[in-house]
Image 1 (cartoon, rainbow, N blue to C red):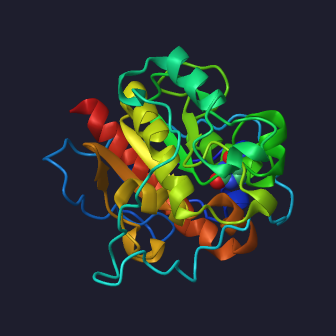
Image 2 (tube, rainbow, N blue to C red):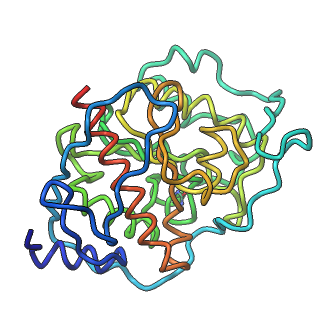
Length: 291
Ligand code: URA
């Protein structure tokens, strides 16, 4: 296969050497075979990816946008089982009936939410962006300063990297058919002050919103980026390094675990692993579409 200049630029950005696709011959080291799918029903063989990359703006050099750290791992919230995350009691004024809401009601509930102290410091809630029936859903951590200002997720440096990664798979947050336009959401809809880590109670208060978003979108694949997304969706304190490379499930939807783009900006060698994760996500989504 020959790569066009834009695809080569994308692979360079992600930090991966060009490879021969599986349908053109054996996998090489630049594109390892997708690992076995775990806890998933029998699925059709993976479809080849369409890597039609549009023009790619160069992602600026590493600039830390959020305090997201992959390693070291957060201490698990329970001492009984270090790999599990205990539920947190929720007492405050969370909007009721979230699990029944349609899109407009859900947007309104998020916009007016006062269920935790983050409502005091926010300039905007950050609901999410993208196609309401997208095949792909990306779940990040929480808004940072620029997201809080704009009311849109991933608009800073990490967002540029995310957009580039998506573009390499012919995916976009901009208007496109549901097969190509993703839906991007965060675990938290409000910015934690000074970009500190989300607190367990904040995550617990916000979780019904994310759950309802997933129910409404009904994606074929969820990509969980960073440990807070992983902890929230998969209820585990396992490190990302041990969760990558296989398919998990959230309410029946396949979930691929990968590093947070802000972490990748500071840990460039791990971009190659993130690319592998996106390839696995693409294969899994294709299998779900075919099945
Ligand atoms: N990091 C996230 O996890 N989400 C955003 O929206 C921005 C940065």
